[in-house]
Length: 244
Length: 240
Ligand SMILES: Nc1ncnc2c1ncn2[C@@H]1O[C@H](COP(=O)(O)OP(=O)(O)O)[C@@H](O)[C@H]1O
Ligand SMILES: [Mg+2]
Image 1 (cartoon, each protein chain N blue to C red):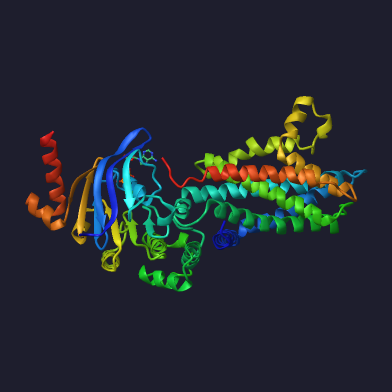
Image 2: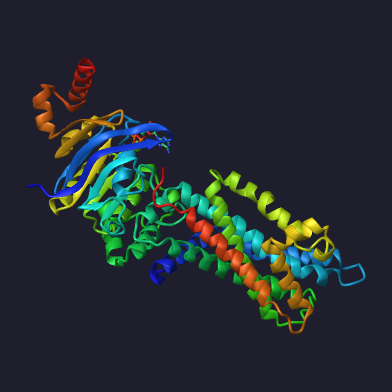
């Protein structure tokens, strides 16, 4: 990998995002709005509804958002010919992927910092563990979403098709991640599937950080990171310097 | 002896089960502008992609400066302008060039030179998506020039440009060739033929003529290249 070209790609992606005001605004404001909505829903109800669900949501949002943003951005790069041009230049595939991961990782950091900040400061989310760990999980989770988005963009011809991968790849993970039904009481077969899905571990990690004062999440983080690396490697395989 | 830029031998390319390039053998010399002319769909873009190294080839060899097309060491030495402009629509002219310059590792002074080269100084801070079609292709052209390439491959670069600008660009191509570059330009418009030092005429995936414009006219006795092209096609049909 080459630092100059990796940073060039990351910088360029960030300029493109900044130019797209509406997308930037949604990236930063929407997660806070969703957290507020969730808090509001439970305001008149007894019990810790918001605090129980908020950690899972803090894991879901960066994953979904980065999946969508990356799949559409890289699909554009594939169809506009700029990817082919870049691959005909002295640019490593790792630099291309690394640049994207860096740019979207940075966006995810700001995005999650805002969502976590709003949740803990204004919405009374109790975090037993260190709050900064929530950010670490969120960023890793965002990189995972980006890596998956990049991979699926190879199988879509239009942006419309790319967005359709969301119900296929993301919704089942949301259903099985423990948000709706605790993973341990799922039917055996579904529990096994849930154990194979990366989002489950991101949600587990978030939940542990918010419930334990000394959360042990290295294993979960390792698994999320492992899935992200695997998806990046698969994504790299779809970047071909030569086409048929 | 002429310096070889590109050396193609028995090149065959099959795309989607169709034979698109059929047994091509020719050279592109350095220090000249070589034109690749032929009707739409005859395989010009596919051939250019094979030379740049982004098209998988089925048989034969393509060598650029003595190395197999697509070699990593060639990536710095080739400027390639795709038929559809491949630049970022949401970046300004200057931002596009600055990005590709960083990828290539060339300085900011080169960005300014290339903006001037394609006559986009006034548009340098405009977002590419809001430029006209011709201006967008010039941005793409400027990107290809950034690395001071020794081989310049241009796929229909003058389509949709006004005559004055077209003339300027051809002068630029000749200046680059005079400086030693191998310039390979495709067009489906035959009236650009006279601007080339050498011509490859293509039809249905085959090269049907490889000569200088003057020699082609003399050989066929035609008044212009378009007529010469038709004569050669007709003669080939008779042979069959
Ligand atoms: N991606 C592709 N898959 C299969 N066939 C293709 C593809 N792209 C182009 N072709 C076919 O290859 C032939 C040559 O195309 P092309 O090289 O673009 O011609 P030109 O540039 O001269 O117009 C055409 O018949 C076209 O249909
Ligand atoms: Mg073409």
